[in-house]
Image (tube, rainbow, N blue to C red; front, side):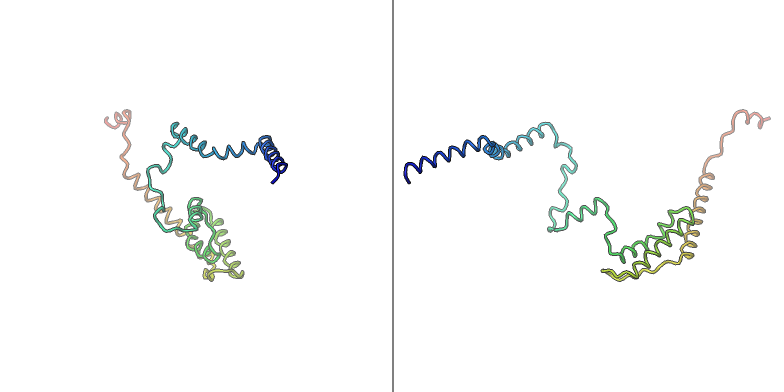
Length: 189
């Protein structure tokens, strides 16, 4: 390599250094190099302030740490935390809703609401029956609307009667009201 080539190379290196200084690339590299010490310093300052005191789960073991690795752990935690429902195949969702239908009907106070709920359930069962789907076969049958409403009326009457008995028992267990002094005088004469 000749002297001229070396001099040209030195000039290129010097120009590159000058360009980096002006563009801030060397400053960025320095920031990246010192970022870990800056993060450590911020953590120490936060610990001194007490920002990490009384965190939820402090002093408790981490859940699921000793179990086998489950690649879908985050999905299961999300479903549990957010209480996500409705991710079942239609046949299983309808089977589950069929099992819970009587309890859902008991929340209604008017017969028209209960009738509408049973008719809606039946319409969804019929739609699922005639729609080809993946998953387990649909074994849920539509409900007889009149029989479901008769059961709803019977359960409602049982609840009302139990409530009447509870009120009567509470009234019988209560002590008789005290007589006022002006009533006592009239009774004592």
